[in-house]
Image (cartoon, rainbow, N blue to C red; front, side, top):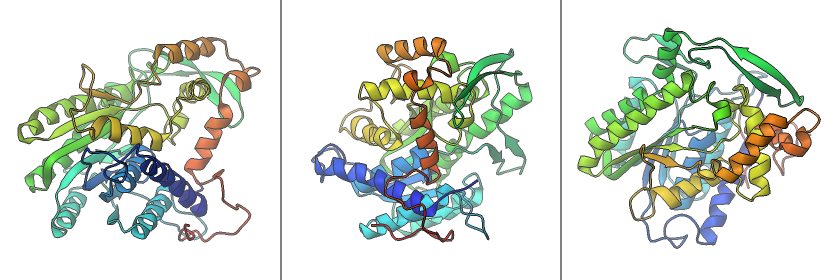
Length: 395
């Protein structure tokens, strides 16, 4: 329920530094990083206030000098209650972008509504621009139908049979077993309605109708597959049904857009700590085991490292975007390496509360979760009183 404005601002600044340091060593971006591949110029991020959406925005702006427009639905501070982390993140991004002389617009509105689409189109047209990259990174659990007003809620459930798995309280370090009843047909359909590709397609369709899609247009949405141990509650469950719909939408969009030089993809990303993944049964324990192994092998990535690699090694190489047989960008390639998964799978079967510290990176999971909310961020004085209404000055 809490977020620290100074911590959120500092965290955004630290992620920005990852990109600027890569620029200085010629490993990311266009021009300043020594890359001959042209990058995006005008980027629209649907859900750009946290996680992979925010990381995409930072990469586009500070790696390629792009103008960015982000749409997210965040709550401002009210009385003694702080704003949501995403509100502080967007504010911090705008400050950093303005200091760097980059055009930036952060729209706080319901991205599912037709009104927001219209408002965004008017903004882009008023700037005399066209969108050449659309990142779709919404992580909402509810979605109002823009035509009927009906409210759909996603469900996190298995399909077909009861699912029992190991779970962990990552703050206490206790392991338990949990069981979940299978979803109804209505719950499956509602989850697809919320988390599938319908809204993404509405955005692309509308921008195309308004003639606001530029030459060499690309659009990317995000997904996750993960290991077999999490499939019953994730990939084979209600969320998996939604992700399959998202991926089918990408293929349909790509076939249509390619006729005019456009492209559409789903990027399957690595497991990271988010407010959503922290509450999915089995996932926190899996991520903790995964982090330990990937850090030991020097392959660990957070959101910002992952998106930086996606831009420079997948989207903007000057050639075709590499995809698998299902037309998916596989940014989970390091996570799903056989040597990584073999170790993680073995530890999944044997880890106990007594061996957690040895076999899993539970402390890293906790730290990432706290940093999402602006806590445990290096360089922040948490003894100083803060004003919830805004972020402090960013160096």
